[in-house]
Figure 1: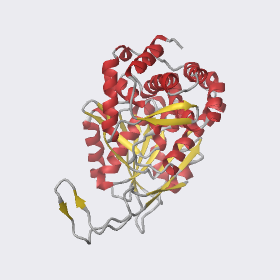
Figure 2: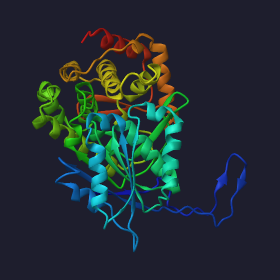
Figure 3: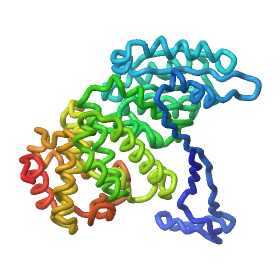
Figure 4: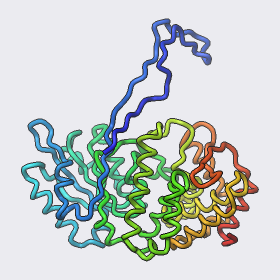
Length: 407
């Protein structure tokens, strides 16, 4: 459990007069600015059987409010429910067993994958169910699913009553290693990834290894693209471990895969809670290394390209570009590509055939963050830099090398 304090970046000084340069007017001398801080607690748990022998972990998180038992509504990714046929009954039984601690408000399923973020009707369904169950700010939504379901349920939780407590139970390696640990949620709009969303710190995240059991092999390895990404930014030692164990992770050897997921989750959490910019108010967004092209590829493929695979391609592209333009040793770039391949991640997709369409992702990325274009690149493993311009000739060459397997 980590405390997170958000301090807005505006000035704390008291200004005797503030000049409105656009209007040419002067505000009254009593106008002032004041800094304030908002404390949060980031709760992250690692379990193996959250609805079985470790169910007290979840039960104790669902705190009562004064003299009222909290209402708890659970949403389960339908792909997870299909892969784990006993899950719905197990969750319902868990809620019934906690009658002295909570009031069950239903167990629902919702489509998994990007479809839940692309169709507004699912957000409306979530909000309608929250309304019909009379949930309030001291109620809980428990989201059990992959990153897309966590995003959609999280968006509903953050906007209903301006915020209902959210407990995330990620069921993919991608969500456990990356997005499920974060403080963002969103749905897609106007054909753009995560255009509509909020920043909202979840009440808790529980990474339960048992929930990974129904994950297909392709989805299992896809999550490690984000683990590679954060290791490249934050930890040469962790990248070396991923490189060394890549083939065993691909084979679903949990003795190395689970520690890799945990390390990735902890690195992501450290950046969010200690990096000074949890709500991305500043220019830099280092955790989105490789994502400017990944998000664009997803949209160009009509979201048929899974996010983890898109990130793997995006990381490979920006890694090669970094070696061409920013001094990343060629041996390090080759090691990154080798690791992604050893994990079983594809590094080619038809969307790479049209670099002009792909480059539109640069402007979308800038708009999403605001201000000038700011991308993270690498001088070396563990040595990221922020850049504001792209050499498109070099970037085209990097895209071609990745797509043609020239490294």
